[in-house]
Image 1 (cartoon, rainbow, N blue to C red):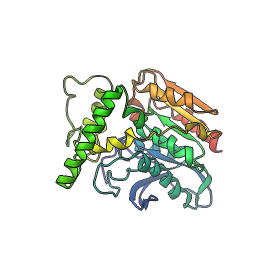
Image 2: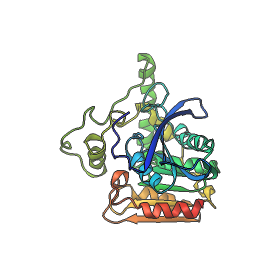
Image 3: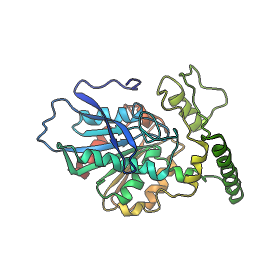
Length: 313
């Protein structure tokens, strides 16, 4: 495998693994840990979920590399239907399945003899922030959660739409299902080029410009992460609320990490208000949404490490 956006630290080893989620779909992942780890010592462990549309070689690799060097056992993965994971047709997304992938990571970690089952946490970047919170609301094995640039894709599916526009979108996507079934496969329209671009296209602004800067250029480009999902995948998010039960994570703690300048900050603000104590908000100065994907100078790893050591230790 290739295409990792960061170099592996000298003291960290990475193992490529495969296992199945509870739906029987094979997941491809990477397990990070310190070299020479004592197999008799039961460690704290973390599962790291990628941004919505991202894969394990991108932001998750940055987090896992750093946190493994700090003593955690860390698991990253490609969501089902994406990257090197199983699932057909490709590029399908689902709020239930993508949340399940987080719990499936806990399944895998809990079978390792050097992991303490009672000290497993989750990190969700961007869309996986919403999935990690949704998973933790029902999976009590997840003892603490960190979100970074959290995006709630179920809120985003209706964001800014009037009731009339929502109805029109349902009508459009419902009719798209006829087209998909008639042609025998679902429509998938990638958002980013097959090869990294040298420049950001004219006219892109705000967070969409940030997304292209990361996914569409050499900064974060990966051929398995070309953006978007099958067109009709949006229907499931319009009919599903990821974080209706976020308050039930308590008394397990949540840390929301956001960029001071992130357009997406309101997602974290909304989730923070709905979550019960213990909860924290870490606002990173001079930081936008995608900076928390890969900028090691801005990602507050000291605070994230301290949060998990306090919460899991």
